[in-house]
Image 1 (cartoon, rainbow, N blue to C red):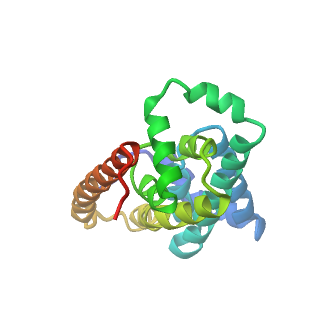
Image 2: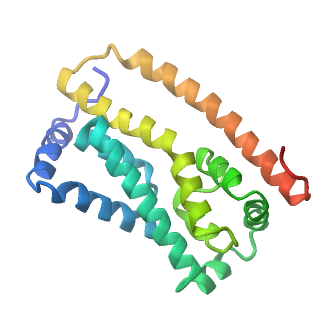
Length: 210
């Protein structure tokens, strides 16, 4: 077995897609709304994306997750630009890293946002508020978020669907695949993070990217 013995948990997980399906067309919309609320209170979005793949499958799960990511990032960005600007500024005013990131975003726009979304330099939920303090446009912010976070949406939604498959088939054949995928992801993540760090440092020094 890949999953530990927990009959009550397995039963709850197996019944979850059916419960959401009972909501009909409102199911994906309710999930996306919960996604936005989750992000607004600075909770991680990764569990939401995995859950989306688990509940809705790889195709609809990707769509719902993409909708949730774009909508939640826009709402937090807008709040930081308007009603919560003073609070957010006060929260991060002593963080030199935030100043460097905002300076890089203002210089490089979409390029830096894409790198930030691909790497965990700043947690997704928090970064939406932080980027709201910069002068980047709404369009650049949404494009950078959509492009940069798409690979994570695809990967995590697929992972959620595979968890559901493992529960249904009770097979350990995929264990080696997930070990390999985890190692590969860690390597890619490290590479992307280093690239984001380098880009931010160059922008902080006033060096343009080519």
